[in-house]
Length: 388
Image (cartoon, rainbow, N blue to C red; front, side):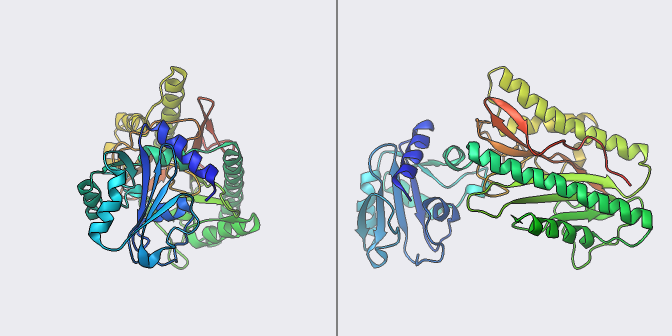
């Protein structure tokens, strides 16, 4: 890690009005610490190490004497310990200050610090606080180059959806069998041709399988039957270091003419997505920075108004960065409530969904905040249910 990265950390620390950021790891249980500090997750880590970055001044690493190189060439001072009492004495220099640590009672995706180690810090006089806001500022906000990479990824995904649905229409017209996995493999082939990578194959869920938000076809998957809802959910990023994900969902019906009740359900779902986007825009225009929880509540309010309260199964969205579920603000007031605010550089999905016994549907777009305004990435978002 270069000194300028430490300075970026310190700027974020001061932005959150904290005294410092305290990283620690044992047996590589905290992947965030390894990732942010650039440490090898395969290196020896049989003893607890700590790396304290203060709001100003030099960082200090506290490592066990039998693993003196745990922190590699990270900048700053090194102090060593053997036993527990010596560790306490080394921690004394950090006492009385508010240290951001990787734990949260609501956002479990960033909660890696175990209760025992947190208690050890408190016994040594440190004041551990949640690092959620700090993680958002340092890792979850996109810069101009990041936004360009995200836009490129999103444009690829929109083009892939067009190709996939064109194939759906061709097969429907021919009357030949179509399986979920046929469409999944088509998307994966497109990823390969476009030099995109993903952490998990895209979702293709037809008929009753669309009622399962995280369905994944096994082997060939289900045979798609006339009248089936088809849910497509795909996420990928460019195959280069530090590239940014895009994540979109489109939905259609394997039918020539969409029944009015299905079309109405989709229009109501669109109202929740567009209502959440409009809420963000209005709040920012008024000089207010809404939280992820605020936006989720607005989306839920719209769906409940249409009578879909019991059909909601998940939050409205999640942060996006180098991970598809990133470190930035989540659009969530229900599962893992997120009170972090939408700052410039925030990138996130808006993906309300409604799920019933026989089918479900979800429409997802990606949004980022630039110059105090929400921007939808990728191209023309879905406004009508796809059909054959």
